[in-house]
Image 1 (cartoon, rainbow, N blue to C red):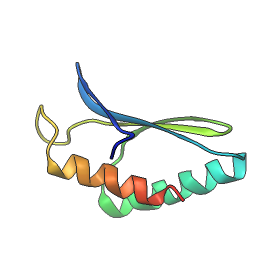
Image 2 (spheres, one colour; image 1 turned 120 degrees about the horizontal axis):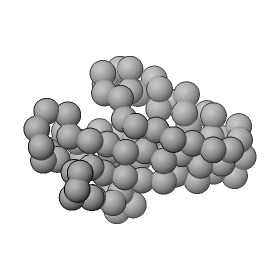
Image 3 (cartoon, rainbow, N blue to C red; image 1 turned 180 degrees about the vertical axis):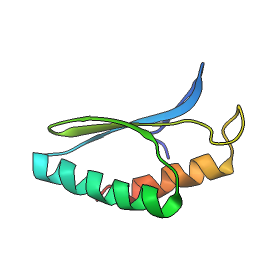
Image 4 (cartoon, rainbow, N blue to C red; image 1 turned 90 degrees about the vertical axis):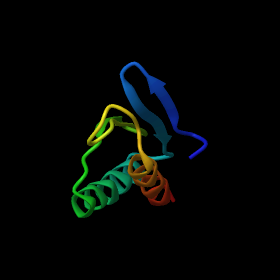
Length: 80
């Protein structure tokens, strides 16, 4: 969780993942897609050839909660 940045306005968590190759980026995006579908939670994603930016916004309320941090940790586990 130490690489996630918490922003206040609007409330959100952000992280940038960087990769050596386009193939590694695509593999991560595929794992992220599967994880998001199984979690029924869909973050904002932007990406390029060797990076992925993810923004998590609170799902239910105006502030981040434990579920938001747990989802972020789950994304961290996808980054191999």
